[in-house]
Length: 107
Image (cartoon, rainbow, N blue to C red; front, side):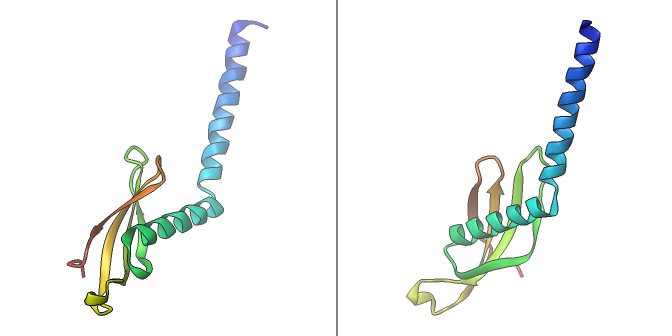
């Protein structure tokens, strides 16, 4: 097989693979799975009781690889007397880890 034909076949296979991966990653099921993982990990990282997502996820450009979420819940400490709180969560898509910071001042 001539090298130019082999190159075109390889290029076509790689392009097809890339297209199928992009299609799979953007399917409604993939987005729902991503959202569920982000909300679960951010709720846990927040340390708040009855933690839930406020609004919608904010998806940053893939070059940054982060998803942001605002989580609201109730502080678990007894001295907080069931005071509600908010936490800003950044979810790293590469490491699948959630990092939070207090966001009580956000309305």
